[in-house]
Length: 324
Ligand code: ADP
Ligand code: F6P
Image 1 (tube, protein in one colour):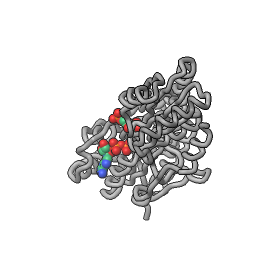
Image 2 (tube, protein in one colour):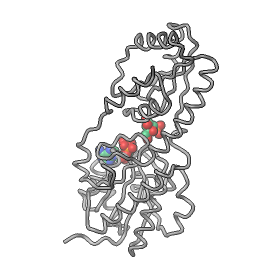
Image 3 (cartoon, protein in one colour):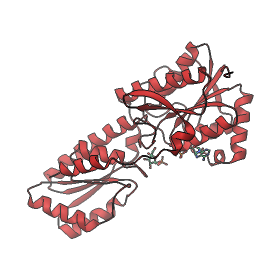
Image 4 (cartoon, protein in one colour):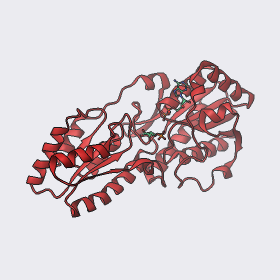
């Protein structure tokens, strides 16, 4: 028989993402509406191990849907990667009466969620990361806001780049995943995009492309470089020396992780928060909420973690085709 959940815990873990507050708010209010108690855990798994646990009511999440960051704060916690840490985490949940847990974060956080589920705490993951690098879902909380923030910033750099007839290398976030770079490449009309998944480090090819474009009458050359490749400053110096074209590097950095969430991030995060509570109420555990083929769904966490996601080659090719 499915375990009846009376108290839900919620935490955010890994890198923060705009829209996490909308998800927390949805978890709290959907659960309260179903007659459950809700406990907020501060600073992810680190706060769980420190027992930073507080009761949440409807007012605890007032005035948060429009705010970036996470009101519960977030952390990375090495101790939770150990069996002892995980067992202590599960014991702390039991001590505080938490029989259902919702973990908002990325793949790393889902591994933590999986361990709690194995230790008897019914646990559901909600995908929260600006990187969009969770294989089982076409949507992750924060990507839409982050990519729009980056796009607006790149438009601004493009204005000055065109005025000065420069080459601009703009570094966007994504250590292991190039989705922000790919989307900005298309949205900003970039001449080149360098993605961790496929960049071949052939700088001469870039140099040739810049020179060809200048001959074709292009007044600027925008290169979107993903954080995973990095070294934008030194690349700019080398490109300037090789092309004779003034080249500047701009690293957008953590501004991409902050700011008020877009409508999409607020709506999808809210739906995912409610959906996660409903899964717990149905007695489900070890699931991750996802968005696929136009609708919300859920996967077994083990299955979700085993899935692989790559950059769609044709989208990369279209970006290149449009940069002539
Ligand atoms: P993200 O969730 O964004 O992928 P991280 O990879 O930094 O971010 O993971 C966030 C946290 O999840 C880690 O600091 C750790 O507490 C927990 N975590 C990551 N991997 C594991 C694991 N293999 N087992 C248990 N917990 C993990
Ligand atoms: O949340 C994802 C992400 O922003 C990655 O794109 C980036 O590589 C990483 O987090 C940076 O994390 P930190 O907060 O440790 O600088």
